[in-house]
Image (cartoon, rainbow, N blue to C red; front, side):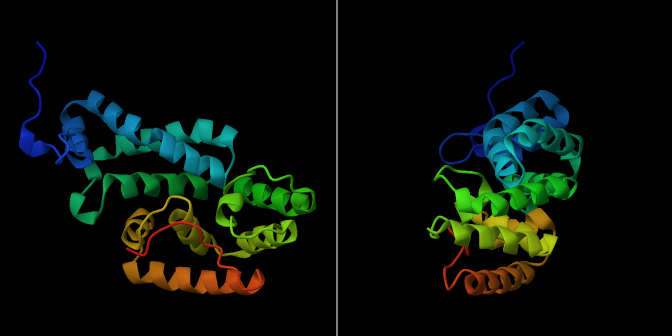
Length: 205
């Protein structure tokens, strides 16, 4: 027998069941987690692809959602949104594949002189305000040199367009740490890029 529709009080103002309610439902009905997957798989896949590469993203996106599914009982709404929670799993996966990200940055740095205007990955997204290929190469070098935590904060904000609070939840760090890291990194990168602000996305909200 088909289950009745969810009561209106479980829906957001648009009539769509919220992420948090879906995740709660999935604890009793695991198949409902597929709706969370459908909502966010493209976004998470794109983020992984920009940080690593498309081939890695194809494999690792599934790994992110599998980890989230297995740990869905641990989600606590008071600690943040389902979206930031998923980016936390994505950050953990990226941390396990740092070598891939470093190789990608190194390749961009080497090929900066031969830049052909096509999008090569997350570095192009971050430097949309930088025209010179040489500047792009400098940014790739600076990103490689950043501590992993600083790079994660910067790229979750610039690429994932997560707010400060969402970044804090994704990385399980204090809110104030996000702001201080972003301020420090942006100052460092502006100096390396001749005063150009490398941020092209993200929110201070």
